Length: 312
Image (cartoon, rainbow, N blue to C red):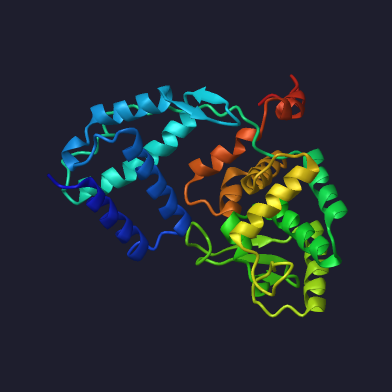
């Protein structure tokens, strides 16, 4: 019997060294496979990959108890969670099928859920004001104040991903022509894209770049650690979110700003194709998932514009 783990390692090696997928993508694939093996430990060989065992995996996923807080146990998962695991595993199983290691993908005969998103992922104006207020009150020096305001500005008006944000370099900021460049080597889509600089963002970037110059920073990366002349790290950004979230009273993660960016563009009647390009999505279906924060109440004004006189 052919060991499943060995094939998965070969798959990851191909993804990393041939397809050159990003570390975050590789990590999520590894975590999903590891969890799959944990939930269905009886699976060890290719022969075990059947629609029946996939069904067992999802049954156990939805019926096992898990801790979600201090001693709080919860049973079941969201449809979106099922879909996330399914998509990551399905890609690996598709690779096995293409390489003739298995005859068919066990997911092919299964009907996956079509999740209906009802959560409001976007931050509203009041929440962002509270975040900025917490930054203004807690900044221990002018450098931190200008840096953190610039970070919030880029997140709000550009919708950058975490890795895109911390990988920005000074050369990517063109204040004269008014564009920020997200280079292909730092973008999830592997494509370079340019984003217009909003006037409010331009003000914050101008002030931060001057403060950065005053400090004598030499690192090419735009956002710099407070204590050392080096890039703001992933861990540093994580602690930044925790600190600002605690002091502002707004529970958030960076990706909520990405939802905020997409939602507010849609509210300004920007079309999905333009939003897709600005966000760097290769598939417009992904863009549409970010627009789930546009509520029925947000459409009231549009509906109120209708009259018997202007019907088509």
